[in-house]
Length: 439
Image (cartoon, rainbow, N blue to C red):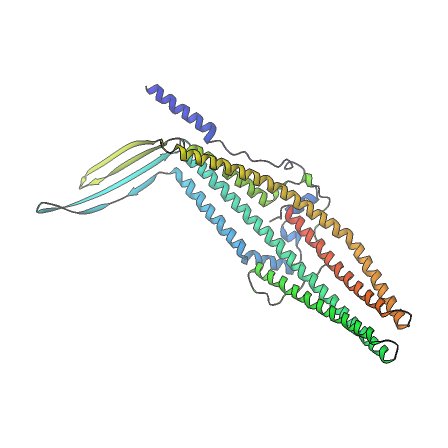
């Protein structure tokens, strides 16, 4: 009989070590071993190496200190770390002290009675309940750390984009100011020509209407500037009544050639977080399996009863095997398996999104760079056209409509050029974020 018990225990240990105690095997990105080229290291740079503008660095540092979302992410990490500590303490026995005293009446007499019991209960982790709980808590802690890093990277990128958006709009407002001054002079010229009998009221009205249109456009740009400044205030968690706009001539580290196939996507914190979420789901499923096995514990009770010379102690073992809960346990296991599959699908989706982000950022950056030269050339041609049509009109051989069309085309071209420069900056920031976002 004793040999049979030993055999059963040995089989139980073997099964638990092969199944319940099995560790999670990470799903590695096949590109993880690829040697990073110069361009592929761009996403691993420190944010101060990427954003060298002193004023922008100050804004980013302020956002990292004050941002509400980042503070909440940090508190979530602290909560997970507390859960992990609690899971580690699960290996230790629980000790309880429950003293009690009082008078007991027996017939006409009363006796003072007291107990000083100490109870110790130790659940043996033979079938891995505590181990899987600890490993799950550790995976969740690492996941929330990665989510905090992802929030930090997103925050840095958002502050940088808002900063350069303000610079773009500020430049566009200046272009509108210049255009307004030009059109005011043109209106004065048309008025003088009409007074001299060389023009008509239609031309004057047309120039006046176009001047009003540019002023409306300037007002709209100012509205956009205020909205972006307010969004930046939210990121910094403080009110920005005013801000000094930076330059659009942003300088970034040399990116070099970026090959998506050679980039380790696990350098992105959101991908790592999805990996840890899958790990936590794996251990949750292992924990559901462990619930089918019995709870084995050791309890010890000792204490003084009535008389200090009376010391009573008891040591006993306990085994609890669920017999009538198997339906619930089986349902819990199926739920855990389903959640693990969901986590796997989400991880694969995150990998795909990460690769797509890099592809989109590269496409946007290349498009903006290629268009930059064309926009500059286009702006120069429209400037030449405006000066030429204006001279022709002054000589009486050109139409005022040609001047108006040339002015409008020059304005739109100048605004588009600035917007394209901003798109190039945004694409660079997006590429940095998509490749990891540094630290």
